[in-house]
Length: 79
Image 1 (cartoon, rainbow, N blue to C red):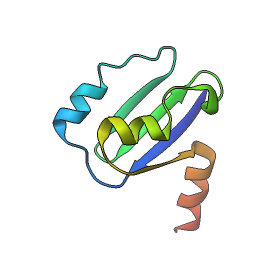
Image 2: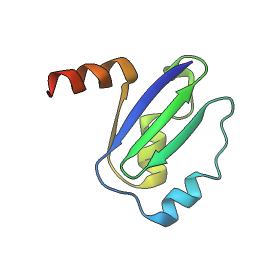
Image 3: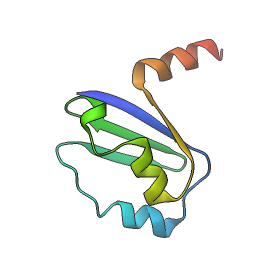
Image 4: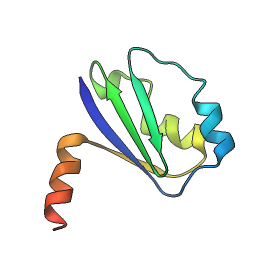
């Protein structure tokens, strides 16, 4: 399993968050927490439908996605 984090440029509307929750791309899953989207991929991220482009289009906000290892490294560098 691979974990990725999508950073959203701004908080999406409640309406768009509710709409995106209707999409089911099992076995991959996602959880939206304000301006962050946690993505759990069972395979490779590039094979998942839960891409950066998917979240930008459905939530109507800019986004960038990083794998968990990179997120932890960025956190380390920010201290």
